[in-house]
Image (cartoon, rainbow, N blue to C red; front, side):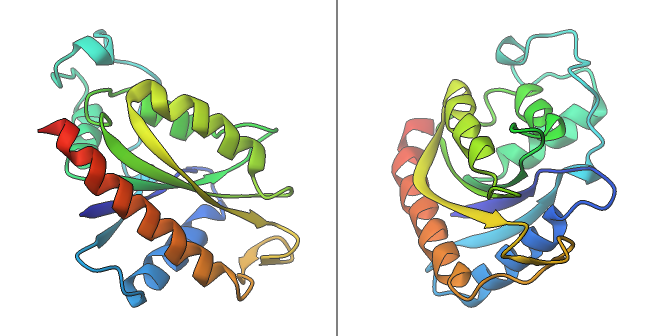
Length: 188
């Protein structure tokens, strides 16, 4: 089971890279069985805004854009995901929403968890992802992590997770792996 930990913000000065690195390092140290983790930084793909002439659901993975093809190959290589998402203006970040929208079959019948951060823990972004991801046939686990910029960051800039967060992450990763294994049979 290969779980991609996706850094969902591309903004300069973003906090998501710190959070994703912590999730990766903490997950690597946990006993997760045959789970392999991979950091996937959305900024490395520099995706354009829905620039492909074909509708992703009908494109049959034949995308015109090289950037989209690289993204497609990466997502296709993963079995499940943890979306590290900020909450911007009570919603999901545009770059990550676009990354979901530019491809379609690569997401199908895979599992995901959401690790959010924001002033109120990113809870509104989590709830929006719970309605968005099923549209591309991603099965979202109930467990979530909601990090507060007040309680889990020093000066709202440096990630210093509360002690309980490592346990929450293990629970999230185990749930994603378990659901990912179950829904993988739908891809066969």
